Image 1 (cartoon, rainbow, N blue to C red):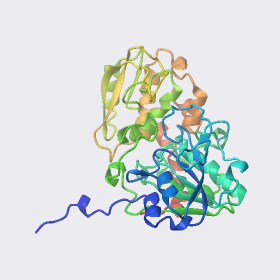
Image 2: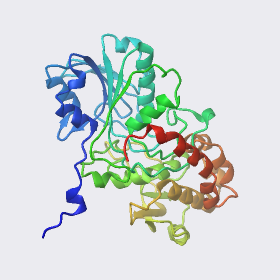
Image 3: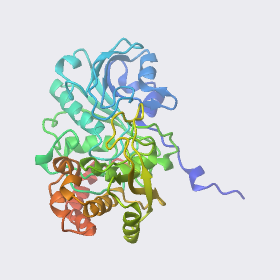
Length: 401
């Protein structure tokens, strides 16, 4: 007797975009549609723009691009101009240029806004900020807003980090959620509206096209979906997994690996002793990860990073080796790394070169205050109560088991 493996027996994961396409865009029939999309907005091997444009019942009337642009090729923080799409003839409006929220004139003549972008599950990844602000614009225009759901690569069960404090709201933190929120974009949209994480959404006609075949325990490799780099410095799933913790190093004078082929998987500085740091971090016994001493030199990489921190300098530090993705804890690992480098730095103030940015990324000023004297485990324990409250608050907005 042949017994099917769990992987073979598993239903295929289909995104909301794929299910909408398989229904012949029934829910968009006869509508003039504004698509908020980028290069990840694909159904198998075709782009959602092309598929919607080819359907005789749908009019692609406007396109909106987030950070990194409609094709996902621009670096972090680069302002992107408006344009015109050659295929559809529709205007392309940048939501990472002179405005980050669709303006009323951009919505003229549209019947609905549709969001379909692959997120990475971290609060400071700006695609979800774009989604929230577009939800506000739709509500103000009295227009429906549809989210085509996609997997959270980190799973729907991993939730970690400080919950954003309101006074630190910014484009890298629009919502009072933890660093790793454990929500799909569809679930997050439901919570943004239902829990009033942004004002003015009470009457928004929010529609979510859910996935099929996805469960909360799934990380990206379990979906069997192909990975497309979600942005130039998130080239693969392992990087996406490490990112919620290693992104905190953007607030320091150390390199988080930008300007190398493996950003967010190693950290280094001119003064660091990689062997000592790796030894200390390995002694912490963190789950699913080991640390290796490494040397690297950040350099210009076309299409990824043209002006990396510490460019051309030889750095020592540590490389992260994820040994078990299912138990690896990216935010907790990031706290341990940040603490180790902070206390090894010969000049701690110089190391923490952008303290306000650390507040914004972490979502709190408490991390800055705790780093000098608290141990990593104490820092991690300090967010337990707010995390428990968040888990309880998000429960009614979950779509998947």
